[in-house]
Length: 421
Ligand code: SF4
Ligand code: SF4
Figure 1 (spheres, rainbow, N blue to C red):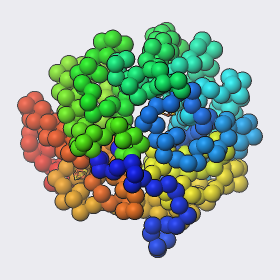
Figure 2 (cartoon, rainbow, N blue to C red):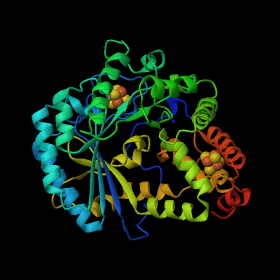
Figure 3 (cartoon, rainbow, N blue to C red):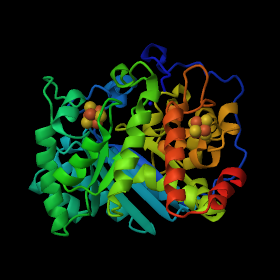
Figure 4 (tube, rainbow, N blue to C red):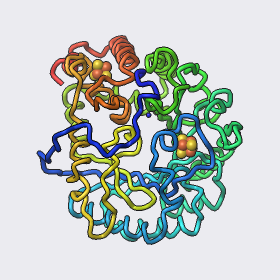
């Protein structure tokens, strides 16, 4: 969640005035096949990461209930059931988020998960995932993950000398040792086939040595699933250095080189796999990816049951004012038909002239390949900007193309994607 584009002082808080005078209107039906909901069951955290967009950049988090209560959870389940039925979606992913979700009392968490599994059991593909800092993981939590078939991802930024720079407890102390202790418990449960393989999410600093980071995850910790989440512009001035997002160019390229040298397909780094899939899949691969993304939507439900835009897009003030409450009689269209969400959805297709003429445009999609459009949002300008990480993405794609050519992939196959899309 982050170019450098955007000094922290330029980040605006939500305001009641829309930056766009004309309210957009819905132009297409919504044939969604996949719904993803970021469910904020806890809006407080047991630690205080310096780059946390949720607590540093959104003035709403502090005013919401600390925990989602049982009545709200029931309403959310009823709303999601209606949303799946109305939209005809075959897949629903519920991402249990915080703050730190494990701050919730276990009996309340259990009731909530039971309500989800019972009320949404008809969904063709129902996946429940949970994002945690792992510091509170114990055997009872693992039992709950096993019983309710919950996949878990742990936030960890690398070895202690890196992680402990930014992921601090409320007393200012590093949290690496406690996180790794929690991760080890989860890994043991996964090794025993009680729960899914554990994912890890790393928010790097531009100064990190990418080889050291990869080696920590793979060699020290035995991790195989790694997601790189670049910091959201404006979430922490510490993370952007003198060149802004350009500082991450070296990190991304070094990480790719280190990963490629291992030639170990069991090590999954989502960003690299997505980019390579688009580059090497030809038109067919690109078309399949577009079809998947075209029928997919994501939104957040806060601890008070209110709907808003996807979590890391909290920079975009118009995405977070849709005062629609998740209830049994609320439809997803009630939410998406609000002027704020119509405007927000419209921003998906907005591209800067630079991106429109960029040779990597079909693969990079204005930087959205990084996982969201927050990276191209500039307060007062909207989303029609190149990604904050444009330079890094361009150099990474050059490196990937050279790597593919070196392994015998015909240039014509890559040109097909770059030229025709
Ligand atoms: S663990 Fe997550 S929610 Fe908590 S402070 Fe860190 S980034 Fe924010
Ligand atoms: S590489 Fe840069 S200019 Fe090209 S599409 Fe991506 S963000 Fe836009």
